[in-house]
Image (cartoon, rainbow, N blue to C red):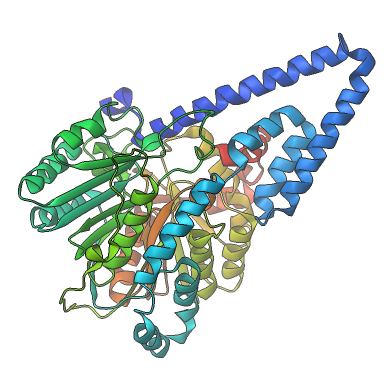
Length: 527
């Protein structure tokens, strides 16, 4: 066994484990209260037990009716309804802790106000581009139109795209581009580990500050907890790097706690942008090997489409102003200044963002649309597979239409409980023709899809409830045969290194869910 595996676990795995432990402790306390309550019903409060039980059931029923009326998928409703009806105290406590997705009213308003200032700066810039896409391939214009109308992010051309099949390649390119920065560098990441890879980045950022470049770093507190010191932000500020922390962890005091920033973005001078699946930690670049080989991917954009990444960064940065001395941007346009650039490639690019503040499921809808629009094949890769009935239906229907639908998941998991739930979704998919592969070299953390050698996605969005419903995410949709075929070829490489488990979960022992998996699926939102 690799010695690194004895020393550490994955960065996101550890953060999620810590988060999960806190939720588990809270859940165990709720269970204890439930047991104590039952004990008192049977002993001390026997004479009024019936009335207390009726009162709790009435309150539980009221909450169940409220959940039933919510505008969310039934896959999200039913576990809460079952839990509250069976265990009213535990179910109610967990719902208030986790189920109230979308933050506070004040946060929703803050994001709405920011988007009303930011998104109009992108509006109307893709009218000619959209018409050209329709002439090129009318069958896919619906996806682009959906992104423009529902997320507010336009379709772009005049953008060169470089795809990285290895996160280490993306990191080296980022470092080289940051060295060339003249005006500003914006970085937003779910997790930062203050070790080898980050230190290389930090030294470059500090040098650019000395040269007069504006540098901002933004990271999620929960994603980085335990991997940076409490004074990490102060350390960066001391080197001239502006730093903010998204949604600081304050258990029981922060109703916004369940919504984390899972985005991964670097913007340099508004000219060059990076995004993809990798965070800024050594394991993503295979400097450490907690679970075998790490597979992650990313893209580099140069040209007009970088404006969308800039807007996405500015949204969360300004929404996270927490101190009186935090400077709030008043002139967003200065970071979106047009510059002359002539792209070599002629494909279409549409970066987009997804937010739990607007009750829209942009990430899930794009994945569903990819499956619906595919005619020959549609491939997905995700570290976690915890999908809604709608997503299951879309993938299954595509397979029934004769589309070659395949999903790649890790061969070595970073979280065994989540892996068990992931495998519990296999049978419902493979029985309708979807093929499942487990990438045996290690842990595949990339989040991508590709269809018909013409369109693809790459970004931060996993095929699980947390990414699709609770987190701030971002991605890129491409209509570009050159990029799509590169992504497709990378999938072929993954298939060659993976073990196909389709038949096992179609007819073998894996086709039947264990009792433990059935129970875990009730708690899928907590994982």
